[in-house]
Length: 571
Image 1: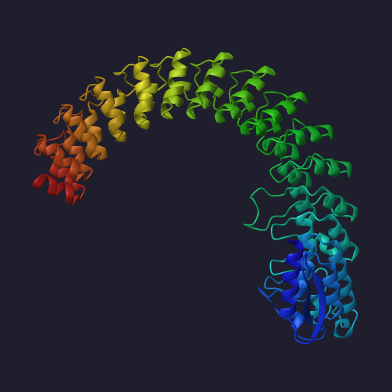
Image 2: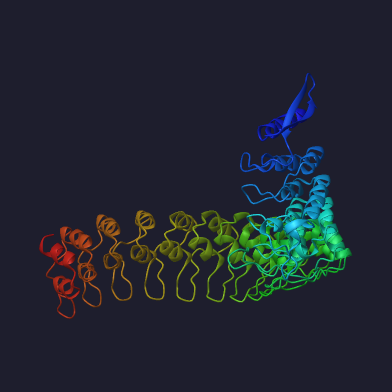
């Protein structure tokens, strides 16, 4: 296959020829003589397939003999293909060190001759074609041969380029603000890292992401990039070279935060051995243990706990690693933290325990883990919310059942009298409402304002919850402290289908609140024409007067609602 590919290459060279000479190649069965171009003809520099010259193809394949032959015959080492790349770019990308050296030597010789001797104030050739011969020349995306070699992990090619005097190129940044050393560390090219360090690359520089180009993190240093990829051998090399494990990015995260957050346990251990601080805090007060726990990396958590990291540090919001683990449902991490001495019921600044957070995301097994460890299923946060409220509001029926099984009271009120059933009704969580009712929640419970769960479901337009509450026996004409029924609130909000459901359940169509208004008054004032029609067809009185003597038509006209006026006049 290799010989066939070389044969095809030589055929390409022959296609580019004008004045003929010969090169002979042998396959397994035949000996073939291929004609190639004379060194001084136009043909060797002619663009061939994507504007690739024969020299490009030979360099791409690492064919040192063909490269030498073409250069000897005058092929231009500064010729560019359609991507602005010279043969040197291609050789560097593929790691062909012999070809790289040959091209560097040819370019250096050309730069010492003729028009290439004229230089500008910066010492660069005045002639644009001569500038293409420089080993630091960039392609159409701004990459030099050294960029290509470093990013591909070719240490010997990188060394050859540095030996050729491209040291100034080693300090350049790419479009994302990354130095060559950053890129080598991020990709795990440890041999390239060693070459660059030996060449004096800056160990303490930070990545200066161009606006809109970076990952939004900012200020990442060498060990951060190595930690991102989990390249432990790179970390070993950098630490041995004196790079500090305490480097911080702009969010004040150390490499240990990054390694822990990405779950690179071996990298975490190497950093800890190298002097990293397991209790370091970022700008939000989070430690590496917070990062590992949030992502569920049990081995990284274990590595940090083995290094005597405190199991329950608090960040700026008062959250512990256990809060982070509970929020994401990482049970094994939660068990490890509790086993290491962390309390199962720590409270954050809002008074929430991990058991408040786990039900919100439906982490039923986490609920059971925390309860088994001693967490209180009835604990109230600073707003009076209990874990059961979070489960109900999040629609997590499984978590509701787990909390009730653990002893949570399904009818316990908050300071405003709201129960978990109120929360489920308002949020439209029918399955959670069913689970609460199955657990014995009070269907007729009222909050501090006399609102029942049915009022909230009607006001929020939650048809499925409302249907289930009525099916379970909720009174469709129940009144809150101002005398308004669920039908008043559904009409006021314009929920036509909810109004139909309540009317089908025999809700009182002409019920009056303390203000004397019927549901029709509220629908007319809100301009809800469809609701007005439903109510009138169900027998609502369009001439009913409220406490101020207004009819529904008066209120519709006052609101300038043409639809409501027409619905009242032509129901």
